Length: 221
Figure 1 (tube, rainbow, N blue to C red):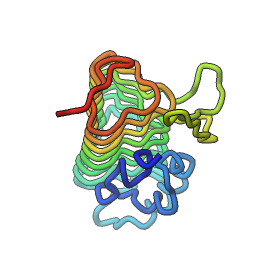
Figure 2 (tube, rainbow, N blue to C red; figure 1 turned 180 degrees about the vertical axis):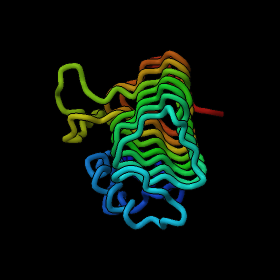
Figure 3 (cartoon, rainbow, N blue to C red; figure 1 turned 135 degrees about the vertical axis):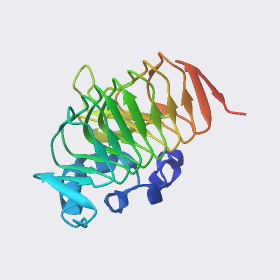
């Protein structure tokens, strides 16, 4: 359970969203709070630093948003971030400083910490991506179970009830996810871990690990 706590997975100094984690032991507890938090934070942002081009949309003046991107609020795009061609942001999203949302990527109800890279053809929903995390081309966070039941986590023999119908993935800081991976509902990947391309990921991946395939996880040397 300790490795699943906020402070073991995420550096809160690397996101504008740190206040929403206050009082939360585990990062998935934040997911239902994102929408309201984005609005409450957005109205406090300095208008000299952030434009407000649409209702509940705040975009840093140093950020780049392609004219072909589709964006909806609530949304905050932080300093130096880049939203590229044909990105689709559906709302309840924070894109951190220096982060990249690339071509044909879709985001909803998620927090991207600073320097996160989601550059090509990915879906990120009901998820949190820690500082410096990277999704390879076509990597997907699947956020609803096939049987539509609530998402649970397994930590050894212990079953953790999240109470959430929609829960994609939590990626710790500096996680690297290879191209074509599917992160099944409720995935948690520990800090500094790597997932090989085309892997279907379920459950919890420890920090400082390499997941080569289902059931084949080794520690980084």
